[in-house]
Amino acid sequence: MAHFGTGLLFAVLLSGLAGCTEEAPPPPPVEAPPAEPVKNEAPPLEAIDPAALKSDDDAGLVPSVRETQKALDAAGLNTQLATLIVERDIDVRNQNLDNAAVRTGVIIADLLLTVKDAEKEKMVANLNKVKVGMTQLNGGQDIIDTIDDISGRVQGDAITRENLLKELDELSGAVIPELEFNGQVRVVPLIQAGSWLEGANLVAKACKQANNPAAADNLLKQPAVVDYFIRYVKEEGSDKAPAAITEKLDASLQVLKGLSTKEGSFTAEDIDTVIKTTDDVLALL
Amino acid sequence: MVGRLFALGFGLVLLAGAPAQAGDTSAAEACLRTKVWDGYAEGWGIRTMATTTLNLGGTRNYLVTLYKGNEYKIETCGDDHFANVDVYLYDLAGQVVRRDETSNRQPVITFTPEKTATYYIVLHARELAAGSSDGSVSMAVTYR
Image (cartoon, rainbow over all chains, first blue to last red; front, side, top):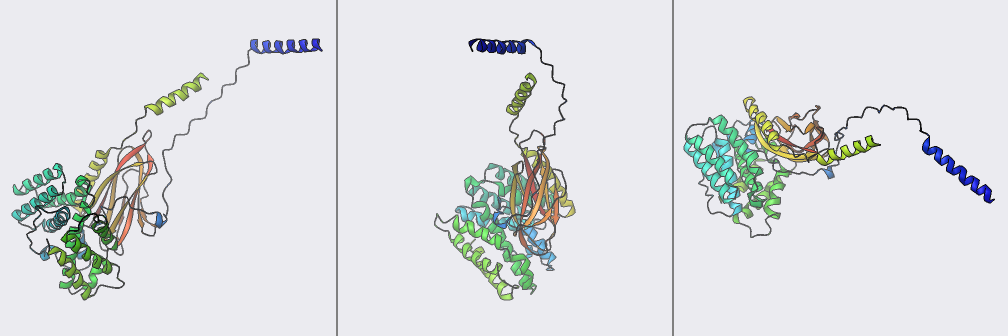
């Protein structure tokens, strides 16, 4: 038994030695298949559950007043909204944030609507008011410098009205919505609310003038826009004492919300309601 | 074995050495701005412009109200970290109303609403350039 064990051990050792000394045949060279290029690609999107559709950015939700003018033209109303603007000396100085934002929004709307025809002095005066508004709202030095630059070129006749239009469109549609206003997230929606309200007021007046209330159906029924303003006017501002304009703005928006979800076409009475409720806010400016 | 170790090591070095690719915001914005400004000659005006950074497969949703009677063009410019950016227009029911059919990084869609309504514009980082981990894309809504 002992011999068998010794012999077995010896045999194992020998085979082990043999394994160490005998060269294993080299594996045949295998050509690696060409590497698939890494696809840095995602599948396309399909329909989305509406409950999962959420907006990451609402700043583009609100149509501009110039865009509203185009839609008014397309609706067959040949009224220039600029001709319906009520002359107001809107003071943006020494206002609280809400007031300054809404007032600045109204001035921006008037600027955009009158850019092609307004007298130079009026244009410069309005630009200066927007600058004061931006200062009040802590818009930052860059926007002040930009407005100063535009204003200087208007004064010096160094910019055509067509180019001025582009620059003001960009200022209101792209530059101001991107400003941080010292972290005050209400500022941009309130500026937009001021502009939109001025536009809604003028559109309603244009429909009344043309005796065509139903034309407002595709111009004033914007429930998502009204909800957006209400959210910022009411919820975001609930931590502070409401200013007179904000209170009136909220009341006005609630009326407009009711009308924007109304079944059927606008009536002459609806148009009068829009004019009155928006006038109520604008009269405070 | 050495070869495999080298490959693995080289791969790790490559991974470690690959910078987190920050999107080139200024390039995307400059590209879009040129397009939008050129559009004025054809009667287009700007509603809004915005820029965002997206990872592969990432999306950014913008809520917009579009008027009946106006024609809209949604223009985009992705920076060169992208190989393909997609842009979609969804209605509030989650259905695709328009989508771009291109495979480039500057897709455009046009749309003329039959009634005034609210929509979502969705930007989608469909394909990134080799070695990129994200990119910047600018989007503009224009109208006429």
